[in-house]
Amino acid sequence: MGQLLQQEIFKFRHQRLAWLAPVILVLLQAGLAMTAHGVSVSDQKFYVSSAYGGFQWLTILIIVIGASCVTMEFEYGTIKQLAIQVNHRWTIFVGKYVLVLGYSVLLHGVVILMTLLLKGSSGRNCSWQNIYLYHQSLLTNLVTNAALDMYGGVMIVGLVFLLASCSHNSAAAIAIGVGVCFVGEGVSSLLLQSFKSLLPVMKWNPFNMFFLQEEYGNPSYQQNVTHLTIQQLGVGNLVWALFFVGVGAVIFSRRRI
Amino acid sequence: MQRIQESMVRVVGLRKTFGRRTVLHDVNFEFSAGKIVGLVGPNGAGKTTIMKALLGLLATDAGNIRILSQPVSVTTHTVVTQQVGALIERPAIYPFLSGWQHLQLITNSVAQMKWVVQVFQMEHYIYRPAKRYSLGMKQKLGIAMALVNRPRLVILDEPMNGLDPQSVKRLRHLIVQLAREGTTFLISSHILSELEKIIDTVILIDQGQVLLQRTMAQFQESARQSLMIRTMENARALRVLLQADYPVIQRGSDLIVSKPVALTPLLHILLDAHIQILKVNQYQEDLETVLLRLLAERKA
Ligand SMILES: Nc1ncnc2c1ncn2[C@@H]1O[C@H](COP(=O)(O)OP(=O)(O)OP(=O)(O)O)[C@@H](O)[C@H]1O
Ligand SMILES: [Mg+2]
Image (cartoon, rainbow over all chains, first blue to last red):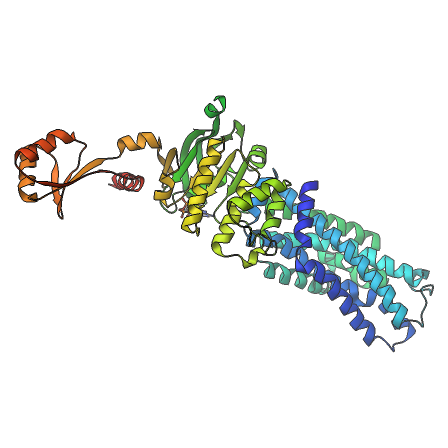
């Protein structure tokens, strides 16, 4: 596994997207920070704690990277060479999953750093020590958000990997992945509103788990939208992640090469 | 010498179906270490499928595959990961990596990487990204990747694809040299004239079945020989030879005797009839002709 991961890292860092992604993120954050220049202090806090939109962009980038990381092996025919090198093909899949999660951690670091810089230059009128949600400081809010976003990524990347191992080109996997992640929440809350009787079961649907980070930012979501506590959302995320990765790995290993 | 006797690959009762179509029926063959084995047959015969099964890339429906006496399947192929190098169908190449980086993915030995780059004369482009390679450059890299680890068994599917004549010749020499040092090769190719120059054994596949497995020595025996004679008076010569019960026909300005015959008595007959001989030539069928004949006979 160690050698496999090393190989994946080697391939990954020679791809342009690996180096481009942080640059794109930083630019997008800076863009939003500029438009947020003259807003009120409470909006200012919101922008800072959500890293100037950095987490949202990061999710899209991770979907793109995750999907292409899996499908490229089939597109280039390199899966044969890989499969010869290991006894169990699912180890390749899991190796890639670990790589993408690791990279997600790195990107979150970049996003937090950039937020610190941007706040230093544009958001002087609210301090890091200012109390924001949950009677915690703004900085704590930011870091908690980052942690929750990273944690949510465990399921999202799992889902994207599952989609990618079913699809024949990365474009399709990316499109469906991004679509699911951004329409999924809407679909879930619509389902929960329409089928009240099925609520006890339906509230555990995977799309509902996307609300993890939002529920932290908007505690009222528990009553109105998700009907699950933060802890329940956390467990749900993990269980679905395991499910997606498990099914994905099986499909990946069975796929004809 | 012990090593030469060792069984390298042993396939027993291999069967593979895609959906309802059976593409390999009861395939059996075996060859020992140090051999160069040619796997030949028409398009769709099942050559690539056999090679994939040997590498544990493909789940099979029945049968037993052993390499160096160790079992090979999709989930157990440690022997493949350690002892086998392969190029299947098209080279496995990431466009964003250079040739050198591809070799780095496979081995840690810089000496072996340098060796393989030098053998295939890839020095002037090995550091360029592979997306800028031509077809033949990619093919050479693919073969280099199969060889760089110096595996004991090398499986090459259509290795001559896109190679220029000079590279084909170099590859041929390299294969023969490595085989002498103990490497075993299983090579599929449609360029029989090239294959014929290097292989020790030929396995003919048709419609998912092994039609025959023979050494080249056995092959040469079964290859038909024929004699071509040109004289000043072909018409009279034909008559004389037919009278002497030779199986002879006229083709263009030549007479063809389509059976191995002793030369001296035949020439005596012509000379005794005072026929002037211009040219005598002995032909032996090549691999291609024999294989095509065998395939045609099977159809009939
Ligand atoms: N993925 C697949 N699904 C269905 N049938 C397949 C698949 N791959 C191969 N086949 C069938 O298996 C048979 C053998 O194919 P294979 O690729 O082994 O032929 P081959 O001998 O390598 O031919 P060629 O000389 O053209 O390379 C063919 O009839 C082909 O149609
Ligand atoms: Mg083939």
